[in-house]
Structures are given as C-alpha cells and as structure tokens.
Image (tube, rainbow, N blue to C red; front, side, top):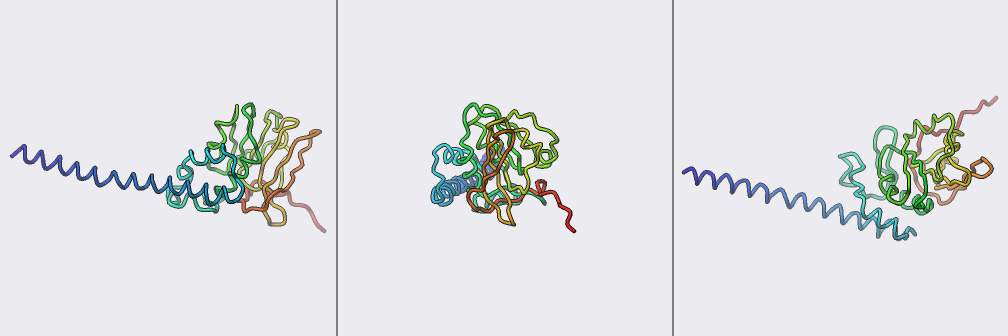
Length: 220
C-alpha cells in the first residue's frame, strides 16, 4: 500500500511539473518572438540597422525592465508607464538614441534615467564607464565636473540645466529628447568652448521628463 501511495504521489508531482513547464517555455518563446518582431517591424523598417544595436536589443529582455502588469506588452511600439511621473520610451527611441550616441570603448558615460534600467543595460557593454543618475538628481545638479565624454538622457527635456551640461567634458556629446512647442524630437549636441547647443533631429514621441521643465519667466 505504501508503495502505491508513493507512486501516486510521484505521478501527481510529475504531472504537475509537466503541466507547468510548457507554460514557462511558452512565455519565454512568446517574449523571444516579440523581441524579434520588435527588431524587424519597428527598428529595421525605421532605419535602425546598426548590427551592435540590433544585437543588444535582441539580447536584453525588455520585459524585465517594466512593471509586472506590463510584461505582456513590453514590446509594443509606444512608451510604457513606469510610475505616476515617468515612462519607458518606445523601443525605437532607444534604438535611435544608441545609433546617434555611437558609443566608443573608451567613453565615460552618464545616463540620466527615466526610472528603468533598460537603456543602461543596452549600453553598458559598449563603454568603459557607465554611471546612472535619476532625473531629479540630474536636474538639481548644481555644478558638474566635466568628466563624461557622453551623456544620454532617457526622455525629453525642455531645458538643459547648467549643472548637467557641466558634467560634459569639452568636445563631449549629449543625446537627449527635446521638447519644443509641445513637440518632442531626438536631439544631439556637443560641448564646444564650454557651451552646449542642442540640434533637433527626428520628430518622435518621447516621454517628457518634467524635472527638466523650462524655468518660468516673468511676463507683464
């Protein structure tokens, strides 16, 4: 009798394991399929064809960088809310930022985070140093030390604070989203003569980082 009960218990355990494994495998396969679709139907068709960018975005599971409730649609072609104030930009925004950044192996990079570590995970293997700072801390920075050759802002800003610009070394470059008259664009800049000027590039939807709102001006 004991051996029969033991066998039944083992059979039930085997059935349970067999029943749960395919679900996990199906989920992984579904996410992998979604990741390939993101590359083929969002990135490639929009001109993001740099192999290292595609390889990085194929490697990093985007679903690990969104809230649990959003994991099922982590690869949609629009931003995903992270909390009440921030959102993870659409995959195409990340791809375009990385292409424009053209990171080098000796780059020291400062990443202004939207609250997700996704862009940093894509970028980290390509550079010498990657430091991450929250949008709130970056916006409140009083004075930079000019130690970074590249700054990436994972969102759109209305205003580039002097403290953040000061973190950029002479000749260094910055890639960010930029808000102009309510329209967001990808923008790039380089520090020359101690000044940073941002040049708007492609118009694309990028979540706005409210911490970088333009200072209010008095009007009469």
